[in-house]
Length: 257
Length: 305
Image (cartoon, rainbow over all chains, first blue to last red; front, side):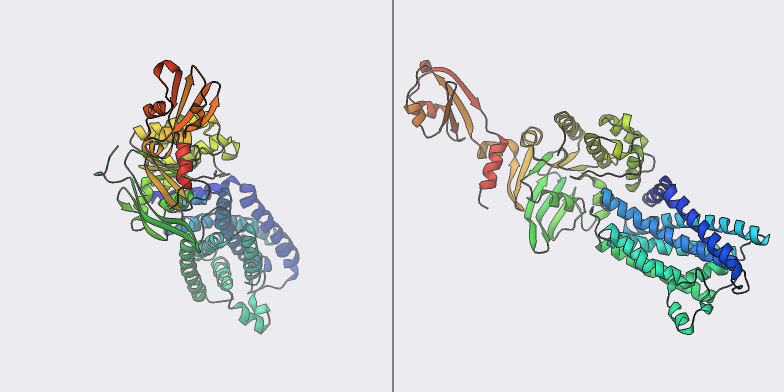
């Protein structure tokens, strides 16, 4: 338990030491997304699911920044440790693969949750300025669940990418060519109902769609997919990523780059 | 020092490590006794780091077995990890944290929550206490090396693995580090080290193993190995200069009036004097120099397996 807590503490302390990069930069990008897409363009877009576009966008951006930051936290932690050589310490110390996965996964949840909450706060400020009312959370427990599940799942994905990567380019490539398309096509900015039918079917294969809509349901009580499916996909995703994480730790290298 | 009846601090049997088709370690077997400082010597690429990496579980062995105080590293990995501290050859440059934070995290990984007393003790011992709030990148090369030693000691291991801990380190620091190793030994810690400084290994280690191309060429008491595999140097200054002094089979050179001879251990000085027909009154001075580990090392490496 002490080993798990120590590694979790280290993961959280690490991103707090570089807050400009881990907190302020995501805050700026959420601020700009909300201002440009939510406020400026949003006023010219019809309501989606009977809610203003700005309200529709806020949970999408929350989940996008949550996933991005959770992934970045664990993958960059491992990548930096591979550079500096201190990843070898984790191999040599009596830490089990479960210690590594749980503490790195939860460290990612903390960073992702902080960024998601900041995005929500910026969002409700913009929403209040535009509509003079506060955007309240409709289902707080569902919101909390999807913050935890989304952060943990993408934290685990970052662990896998970090361990399997043989250079920092591998992580960047994974992030740019796999993660980013999944996020952008996962319903952050638009409802899949606005897509052509073939694209809707394609989107339904994207697991990120279920996570984004799960969190959107928690905030707004609207979703493109059923809550049951969102819960199922999130749990299945965590299970698969956890098993892949165990495999990555067992098979991949702890040696320095 | 015979400890045969005690549980070995480290017991390696038929250890083999392959990287693809390349056999880096070939059926190596040796023991380290509790409280002993043992040096594993060998040229670059001999397999020393591979062996240390296997003991510290950084690398998996291909075949054979490794036990630390009777604990098999493959069957009881977590327990064996707690028994060892390891100082890797390459310096770790962890950028985010200061010295105290790094040692605090390291303690936590070993299940020790509040370890400031031990951490401060080690920091004082290694001369790092004044630098405890510095980040790694602010430390000099020698301090970084000491920090790595500190990391290996926070959980009070019973066996310390030092993989070339003095590589690229100045003379003073090397001396300090070896004195610290002596201190750890006096506290009962067993130490396995690799080094290219043979003179230091000779002074520090009770026993050594000489490794070459993955094979253990020799293992035994340092003094015995030197005695067996090196030559004693005899320097004789005589009243007169005779040509037959230089014709002797053991003659090496003449320098500043001294005739020098290399004697194998089984050849007595008396026999040499007899061969040179030298009487006590013909000799002005006589000096002997014992063989060195360096000489024994070279001979061992040249030996066919």
